[in-house]
Length: 192
Image (cartoon, rainbow, N blue to C red; front, side):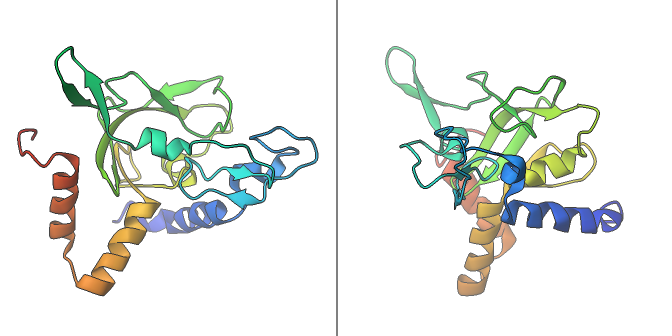
């Protein structure tokens, strides 16, 4: 907490930045259909990084639903649970719709908590000369880091909102909410 207190203004700025136009502030066209002169005006809260799309958007699958969806792999006899980390997907932060020219690999064990459980991911941070701190890159992606120094665990803003509503309506404790997330991830109890 002592480490976080001097950075609380930066946290607030990053969270409010996501409520505005975010990365699309300087975008001249729609990032979805690439129509020139069409500025994004529709905000998808489920999309990774809060994409802005134009009113003429095509059908698309929100990236957050792809990233934070439980996956199963066929082993020849049955489906086994897997993660996008195991499937070698890498999530690049701070460069929407583009590759970072100077990516920095995140921790080998990066975990994100979402409304449908825990997810292991491979994450690359932006290490460009004008890159913002790691925690700000996560906040701009609507992921709240557990620590400001070398973050390796995050909670999605959607989960924080869900927890807030649950505590107001049902007085659920953080411990019981966490245990429910564990059960949501793997209800068999076989995976620690």
